[in-house]
Length: 137
Image: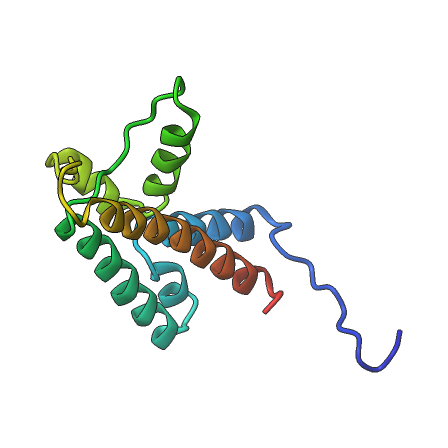
């Protein structure tokens, strides 16, 4: 082994470790930044929480649409999966019929972009929390 190489640690091999890893990933999906907060990365966790919730709220304010999962229209289905990436805020918005979108609004497309990007960024934040949990970072 060369001096610069790290040894690969055993990660998520024990049931308790894999269960904890699953809980971290579930928390990271459900609440933006929660995975980082759980892992002790408070500053990152609060930044992710504030930024992603602000993006989601701004998307709703700009009259963007939270897309339904319609498999007959592939782009709408992909947008729906991206929206669902935000977790509980997405569930809350769906439950209270927020994000119906106003197609005639000037800001409609901007709102859609904010909503979609917030969900996709949360999925990236989830992957980052996973990498931290397994020791890659």
